[in-house]
Image 1 (cartoon, rainbow, N blue to C red):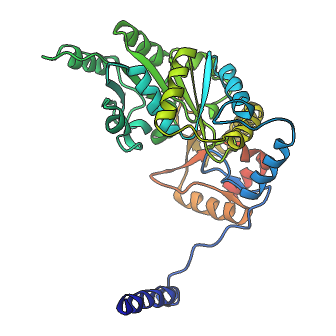
Image 2 (image 1 turned 180 degrees about the vertical axis):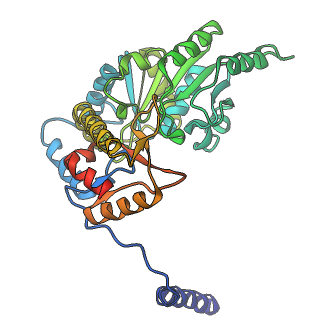
Length: 378
C-alpha cells in the first residue's frame, strides 16, 4: 500500500516537472485561441462544440412553452419531434433513439428478419465504429464492400449477391445498409443515380434498404432530401451533431417497421425514462437548420469564389460534397492563415498533402465573408 502511494506521488511529481523541462529543451505549447464567444467560428466540424450553459438556458426557455414531458419516450416533445422528422423525410413514421449506433443496428435487425446477411460499405460507421454490434447481438453477417469509395459498383453488388445466393448453402441477403454522407471520405454523398441503381438491384433480390444519414441535413439546399431518402425503407439522422441536442437520433420508415423497431429499442435497453430534453432541443434545431445551412452554403460559395479569384487558393473538385470541401493552397499560406484565424477566433483546418479541409456549418454566418477572405489571404 505504502509503496503504491510512493509510486503514485513520484509519478505526479514527474508530471508536474515536465512542462519546465520541456520548455528548457525548447518546447513551447501551442498558442491558445481567444475565449469562446458568440463570434467564435469553427470551420473544422459540423457545428460549434456544445456549450452547456447556453444549452441549458435554451432548454429552460423552450420547456416553458407547454406540455413537453414524455413518459418512456411516449408523448410530449418526443412525439412532436418524431412527427416533424417523419414529415421532413417523407416517411410514414419515426422513432426517437438515444444513439445512432442503436438506431442503425435496430433498423438492420428489423429489415433482415430471418435473413441475417447484409451488405454495407467498408468505410461506414456501421462496419468500422460499432464494435461488431450487428454480428455480436443480432447474428447478422456484414459483408463490407467498396473500401475507400463511397458506394459499391453494380459489379461488386452482383458478385456479393452471387456469393450469397449461389453458394453450396444459399443465403438470402436481408439488407443493404449505406451511409451517406460518408464521414470517413470527406463527407461525400452517394450520387442519387447510384442509389437508384443499387435500389433496383436490391428490389430484384428482395433485399431491403437502410440509410445511415447521420449528417444528411448538412448537405447543400439543392439536394431534395425527401427524394434522396425515398429509395430506403429506413433512414437514421443524428440529433446532436448539428441540431443542438446533447444526444439522440431518429429512425424513420413505414409505420409497421418503426413499430417493430420500437420493440427492439426496448429489448436493447434503449427505452429511456424521458427523452424530452434532447427532443425539445433537436426540434428547435430542425426548425432553424434548413434556412441556416442554406445561408451557410451560400456564404461558403461566395468565400470560395473570392479565394479562387486571388489565384492563391483552389477548391478541389468534389461534385458530391455534403458540407466538407478541400482548399488547395501552399503550405506557407495555410500556416499563416491558421495563425491569423487563431488570433481572430476562427478555427481553420491544418494543411496536409497540399490542402486543408473546410467544413460548412452555421458558425460561418457569425462573420462577413470579407473577414474570412482577410483571414485566409492576409
